[in-house]
Image (tube, rainbow, N blue to C red; front, side, top):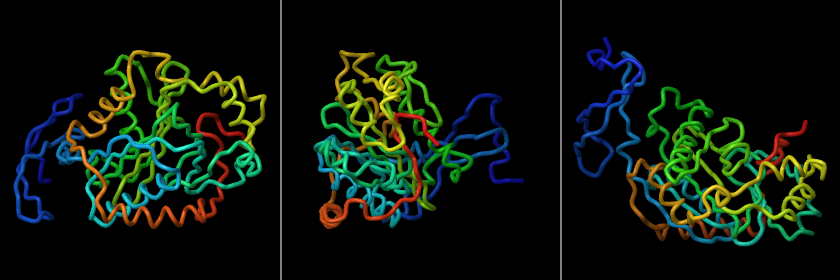
Length: 314
């Protein structure tokens, strides 16, 4: 008989109760009430996600290399159990293309990157290439201990991805935008893609990086994306143009501040504290930033991934 075998789950309905357990890794031995969720009949799990308080770092504009530096520093802090779970928002200063950590440089024409005035960086997550514009979109990164997610299989990237993306959909639903999750591509409203996400799982942590388009891209920018990426041509313009949209097309009265407010509440289960980087994190990030300025890509990816907003071309 398992420890929780005496608990009975209601069929087809999540059941919650509370279990008082000791939190052993605190400065003092504390006790607190943590919601208990039943994954299925006869199986129980402590829903730590409801008990985790997440540090939220408000929206700021950073240079591309600093964005990468911050994400790596925050991930390192979670891995070492020296940093709190963190949700950080940022805009990218200037025109930027971010590649995933395993993505090949051969996915882009380097001469075209320079010609169009883009900065190229490599992110610590999976996914595909993303074009960033400081006035049309904003990005976010959520980093937390993997054990805090109430999922039966924490080593399944797809389950983790869908769980977190569902929270983004809930946030958009709250502001009147009926969104849905596509497990291969991101978050859609109708047939248009408004949000792209990429995740990374380690043995100890989960990282989710995402971008939300709040303004529709100009036609010239769509042509630029196709000009820079090696796997596409201008013949793909119609598909990309039809896919790309901004939230302002569906809720023009909703501000970025409102979007972020609802997104924060949903991603954190409304358990968060507005905070800032520690001095140690700032120092480490500055050191990495200087390294990335000298060598933005750091590592050599080998996978041809393509563009976040388009299906891959083999």
